[in-house]
Length: 433
Image 1: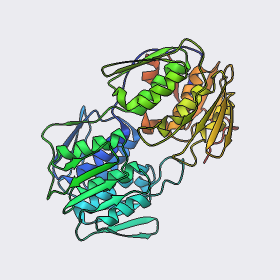
Image 2: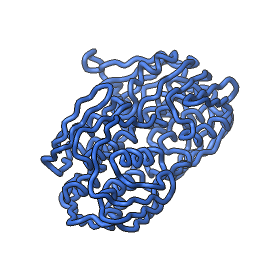
Image 3: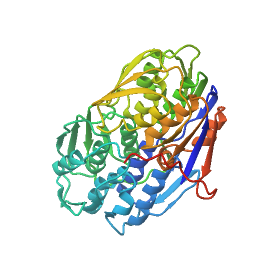
Image 4: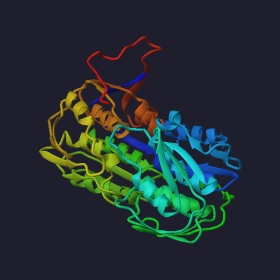
């Protein structure tokens, strides 16, 4: 187990090149199962979640070669099962459900794990796939799915679901006839999957809107050209907030500013200067942080994956802010750790009242999920003194080269291997389950 040492109180200045998006890469990797042959993906981030997905595909019989451009061979599938030992590490493993049903007519997928931020059921996935002609049984924590033939259908989700929309899209592209998906997720990562599927020969229109139409085709084939994964808007947002919370100026390049609109609006209302130019976004702050009320919502609303980072910023605002979480029921676990750093936050149901304090002070804290980890790093960067952050496995799931990127913009942050150095975590620090 490693820990992060963060010496806070230094304004961050400089430029960060944004990596490929984790939440786009994972469904694209699953989608390669639909088209037998060699696929090539560019801008693939080096993340633990990506390694987990590649391991899962390898277990199914699809070897890969990681390099500047990923090569993955999906000509043969030896298994149609996603076992618990891999699925438990990452909820996105459930994305192989639709592709396996479409290609093999059956799939056996353990119920997913991942961050402990809520129940996150897959009932909407199953509802959509059942409409396409799939049958499911749940036995021993594993979903067993079968279909004789996929047929197009009209599907209306009860609520927008990103991975549910993606699973249905991947199955529908090989279904017989037309499929209409209503109340579809509009996230950029869903649109990226649709573009990738089109590069394989799928017929899709309407991505990025609440209604997506799919015309099924007999088969798909890998694209001749490598497909470039879109940039990670959550990684970009995290570094932009790092500039804001430390009173510095950070520029993220290789971004798509339109994907960051909701976050940039919040940062502007919080007193930051925001500038966009081409694929670059700059956020700077000189004056005080103003309080802002934030409500998470499906895209194009404020992303739940930026809630913890912005809450860290608002702990230093001149006044009280309200942060309302509408997506996940258990995504305030970082609050207890921010309190250790000196924040003033009171939680009432799905709303946190954040009363700004003059300063945060370094402390030992524990990362409880992926985005909570990022929020704690940002808070530590602004705090007086040194902070220790434990359970870095969460950060490794979603942030490529976090330490060198932060060091490149002036952060005093270091990663230590606790076991190799004989260091033990503080006895008073307990992870939240």
